[in-house]
Image (cartoon, rainbow, N blue to C red; front, top):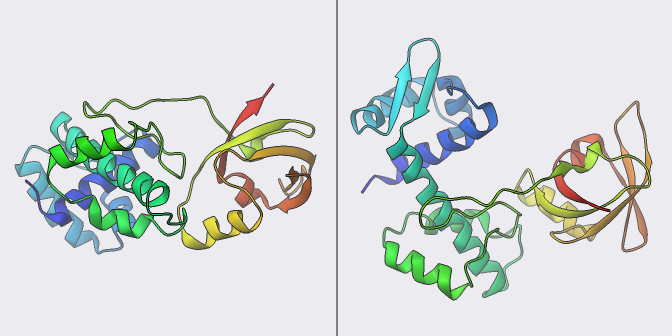
Length: 219
Protein backbone atom coordinates (compact mmCIF):
# COMPACT_ATOMS: atom_id res chain seq x y z
CA UNK A 1 0.00 0.00 0.00
CA UNK A 2 1.16 3.52 -0.82
CA UNK A 3 0.11 6.90 0.49
CA UNK A 4 -2.41 9.04 -1.36
CA UNK A 5 0.38 11.46 -2.27
CA UNK A 6 2.62 8.69 -3.60
CA UNK A 7 -0.20 7.36 -5.76
CA UNK A 8 -0.92 10.81 -7.15
CA UNK A 9 2.74 11.24 -8.11
CA UNK A 10 2.89 7.84 -9.80
CA UNK A 11 -0.21 8.60 -11.83
CA UNK A 12 1.11 12.03 -12.80
CA UNK A 13 4.48 10.63 -13.89
CA UNK A 14 2.77 7.91 -15.93
CA UNK A 15 0.70 10.50 -17.83
CA UNK A 16 3.76 12.68 -18.43
CA UNK A 17 5.69 9.66 -19.73
CA UNK A 18 2.91 8.95 -22.22
CA UNK A 19 3.13 12.50 -23.52
CA UNK A 20 6.92 12.76 -23.66
CA UNK A 21 7.91 9.13 -24.41
CA UNK A 22 11.10 9.83 -22.44
CA UNK A 23 12.35 10.59 -18.95
CA UNK A 24 10.19 13.11 -17.12
CA UNK A 25 11.80 16.22 -15.66
CA UNK A 26 11.25 17.31 -12.09
CA UNK A 27 10.00 20.66 -13.38
CA UNK A 28 7.32 18.94 -15.47
CA UNK A 29 6.22 16.94 -12.44
CA UNK A 30 6.16 20.07 -10.27
CA UNK A 31 4.00 21.87 -12.83
CA UNK A 32 1.58 18.95 -13.10
CA UNK A 33 1.34 18.52 -9.34
CA UNK A 34 1.25 22.29 -8.75
CA UNK A 35 4.00 22.12 -6.16
CA UNK A 36 7.63 23.14 -5.64
CA UNK A 37 10.52 21.37 -7.33
CA UNK A 38 12.03 20.70 -3.90
CA UNK A 39 8.90 18.78 -2.88
CA UNK A 40 9.13 16.75 -6.08
CA UNK A 41 12.76 15.90 -5.34
CA UNK A 42 11.82 14.60 -1.89
CA UNK A 43 9.05 12.42 -3.33
CA UNK A 44 11.30 11.10 -6.10
CA UNK A 45 13.71 9.84 -3.45
CA UNK A 46 10.89 8.08 -1.60
CA UNK A 47 9.55 6.44 -4.75
CA UNK A 48 13.04 5.42 -5.89
CA UNK A 49 13.68 3.80 -2.50
CA UNK A 50 10.54 1.73 -3.05
CA UNK A 51 11.72 0.70 -6.55
CA UNK A 52 8.82 2.53 -8.18
CA UNK A 53 10.94 4.79 -10.37
CA UNK A 54 14.51 5.44 -11.46
CA UNK A 55 16.21 8.81 -11.60
CA UNK A 56 18.89 9.82 -14.10
CA UNK A 57 20.80 12.98 -13.28
CA UNK A 58 20.18 15.79 -15.78
CA UNK A 59 17.61 13.62 -17.60
CA UNK A 60 14.74 12.96 -15.23
CA UNK A 61 12.72 10.04 -13.92
CA UNK A 62 11.02 7.00 -15.40
CA UNK A 63 8.73 4.49 -13.77
CA UNK A 64 9.95 0.98 -13.13
CA UNK A 65 7.75 -1.97 -14.11
CA UNK A 66 6.41 -1.97 -10.57
CA UNK A 67 5.73 1.76 -10.73
CA UNK A 68 3.93 1.42 -14.06
CA UNK A 69 1.75 -1.42 -12.78
CA UNK A 70 0.82 0.61 -9.72
CA UNK A 71 0.00 3.70 -11.81
CA UNK A 72 -2.19 1.64 -14.15
CA UNK A 73 -4.11 0.19 -11.20
CA UNK A 74 -4.87 3.71 -9.98
CA UNK A 75 -5.91 4.86 -13.45
CA UNK A 76 -8.10 1.76 -13.82
CA UNK A 77 -9.96 2.62 -10.62
CA UNK A 78 -10.32 6.27 -11.58
CA UNK A 79 -11.83 5.56 -14.98
CA UNK A 80 -14.12 2.78 -13.77
CA UNK A 81 -15.51 5.09 -11.11
CA UNK A 82 -16.11 7.74 -13.76
CA UNK A 83 -18.15 5.23 -15.78
CA UNK A 84 -20.13 4.28 -12.68
CA UNK A 85 -20.86 7.91 -11.78
CA UNK A 86 -22.06 8.77 -15.28
CA UNK A 87 -23.91 5.58 -16.22
CA UNK A 88 -25.39 4.56 -12.87
CA UNK A 89 -25.69 7.80 -10.89
CA UNK A 90 -26.42 10.12 -13.86
CA UNK A 91 -23.64 12.59 -13.20
CA UNK A 92 -22.62 14.73 -16.16
CA UNK A 93 -19.23 14.06 -17.75
CA UNK A 94 -17.85 17.37 -16.45
CA UNK A 95 -18.75 16.48 -12.85
CA UNK A 96 -16.97 13.18 -12.33
CA UNK A 97 -13.22 13.82 -12.50
CA UNK A 98 -12.82 15.29 -9.02
CA UNK A 99 -15.07 12.63 -7.48
CA UNK A 100 -13.08 9.86 -9.17
CA UNK A 101 -9.88 11.47 -7.84
CA UNK A 102 -11.15 10.62 -4.36
CA UNK A 103 -12.51 7.17 -5.17
CA UNK A 104 -9.38 6.00 -7.02
CA UNK A 105 -7.51 5.55 -3.74
CA UNK A 106 -9.80 2.76 -2.48
CA UNK A 107 -7.49 -0.20 -1.95
CA UNK A 108 -9.79 -3.23 -2.38
CA UNK A 109 -8.98 -4.94 -5.68
CA UNK A 110 -11.96 -7.25 -5.22
CA UNK A 111 -14.24 -4.22 -5.10
CA UNK A 112 -12.67 -2.81 -8.27
CA UNK A 113 -12.97 -6.12 -10.13
CA UNK A 114 -16.60 -6.46 -9.10
CA UNK A 115 -17.25 -2.89 -10.18
CA UNK A 116 -15.69 -3.70 -13.56
CA UNK A 117 -17.96 -6.73 -13.98
CA UNK A 118 -21.01 -4.79 -12.78
CA UNK A 119 -20.39 -2.17 -15.47
CA UNK A 120 -19.95 -4.80 -18.18
CA UNK A 121 -16.14 -4.48 -18.43
CA UNK A 122 -16.07 -1.13 -20.28
CA UNK A 123 -12.99 -0.37 -22.35
CA UNK A 124 -13.32 3.42 -22.28
CA UNK A 125 -14.38 6.02 -19.72
CA UNK A 126 -16.90 8.87 -20.29
CA UNK A 127 -14.14 11.07 -21.73
CA UNK A 128 -12.99 8.43 -24.20
CA UNK A 129 -9.86 7.41 -22.28
CA UNK A 130 -8.99 3.67 -22.29
CA UNK A 131 -9.55 1.71 -19.08
CA UNK A 132 -6.72 -0.70 -18.19
CA UNK A 133 -7.92 -4.23 -17.48
CA UNK A 134 -6.95 -6.13 -14.34
CA UNK A 135 -3.62 -7.07 -15.96
CA UNK A 136 -2.83 -3.50 -17.02
CA UNK A 137 -3.60 -4.05 -20.70
CA UNK A 138 -5.04 -1.08 -22.59
CA UNK A 139 -7.15 -1.10 -25.75
CA UNK A 140 -5.65 1.22 -28.34
CA UNK A 141 -7.53 2.66 -31.29
CA UNK A 142 -6.69 4.85 -34.22
CA UNK A 143 -7.62 8.45 -33.62
CA UNK A 144 -7.02 11.89 -35.04
CA UNK A 145 -7.44 15.39 -33.74
CA UNK A 146 -10.47 17.15 -35.18
CA UNK A 147 -8.14 19.97 -36.20
CA UNK A 148 -6.32 17.59 -38.58
CA UNK A 149 -9.40 17.04 -40.73
CA UNK A 150 -10.04 18.73 -44.07
CA UNK A 151 -13.25 20.24 -45.38
CA UNK A 152 -16.00 17.74 -46.31
CA UNK A 153 -14.67 15.04 -43.98
CA UNK A 154 -16.92 13.40 -41.40
CA UNK A 155 -15.87 11.91 -38.09
CA UNK A 156 -17.11 10.59 -34.76
CA UNK A 157 -15.97 12.12 -31.48
CA UNK A 158 -14.24 9.42 -29.40
CA UNK A 159 -12.39 11.44 -26.77
CA UNK A 160 -11.12 14.72 -25.42
CA UNK A 161 -7.71 15.96 -24.31
CA UNK A 162 -8.99 17.89 -21.31
CA UNK A 163 -11.47 16.98 -18.56
CA UNK A 164 -11.75 20.54 -17.26
CA UNK A 165 -15.24 21.68 -16.27
CA UNK A 166 -15.30 24.71 -18.57
CA UNK A 167 -14.15 22.78 -21.64
CA UNK A 168 -16.59 19.90 -21.18
CA UNK A 169 -19.45 22.29 -20.44
CA UNK A 170 -18.62 24.19 -23.64
CA UNK A 171 -18.74 20.98 -25.67
CA UNK A 172 -22.01 19.90 -24.06
CA UNK A 173 -23.52 23.31 -24.76
CA UNK A 174 -22.69 22.76 -28.44
CA UNK A 175 -24.01 19.16 -28.44
CA UNK A 176 -20.54 17.63 -28.75
CA UNK A 177 -19.88 14.50 -26.73
CA UNK A 178 -18.60 10.96 -27.10
CA UNK A 179 -20.31 9.47 -30.15
CA UNK A 180 -21.25 12.81 -31.71
CA UNK A 181 -21.02 12.96 -35.51
CA UNK A 182 -19.02 15.93 -36.79
CA UNK A 183 -18.92 17.16 -40.39
CA UNK A 184 -16.21 19.66 -41.34
CA UNK A 185 -17.82 22.39 -43.42
CA UNK A 186 -14.83 24.70 -43.77
CA UNK A 187 -11.26 25.10 -42.54
CA UNK A 188 -9.31 28.32 -42.04
CA UNK A 189 -5.67 27.59 -42.97
CA UNK A 190 -4.25 30.73 -41.35
CA UNK A 191 -5.81 30.32 -37.90
CA UNK A 192 -6.50 26.57 -37.94
CA UNK A 193 -10.12 27.21 -37.01
CA UNK A 194 -12.95 25.00 -38.27
CA UNK A 195 -16.62 25.31 -39.01
CA UNK A 196 -18.32 21.99 -38.31
CA UNK A 197 -21.87 20.70 -38.38
CA UNK A 198 -23.20 18.89 -35.32
CA UNK A 199 -26.76 17.60 -35.66
CA UNK A 200 -27.11 19.86 -38.72
CA UNK A 201 -26.17 22.96 -36.71
CA UNK A 202 -23.01 24.84 -37.83
CA UNK A 203 -20.49 25.61 -35.06
CA UNK A 204 -17.27 27.62 -35.23
CA UNK A 205 -14.37 26.02 -33.33
CA UNK A 206 -11.01 27.64 -32.66
CA UNK A 207 -7.81 25.74 -33.40
CA UNK A 208 -7.27 25.16 -29.68
CA UNK A 209 -10.67 23.54 -29.27
CA UNK A 210 -10.44 21.54 -32.51
CA UNK A 211 -7.05 20.17 -31.38
CA UNK A 212 -8.55 19.07 -28.05
CA UNK A 213 -11.11 16.70 -29.59
CA UNK A 214 -10.21 13.17 -30.69
CA UNK A 215 -12.13 11.62 -33.57
CA UNK A 216 -12.21 8.65 -35.90
CA UNK A 217 -13.01 9.21 -39.56
CA UNK A 218 -16.29 8.08 -41.06
CA UNK A 219 -15.52 6.62 -44.47
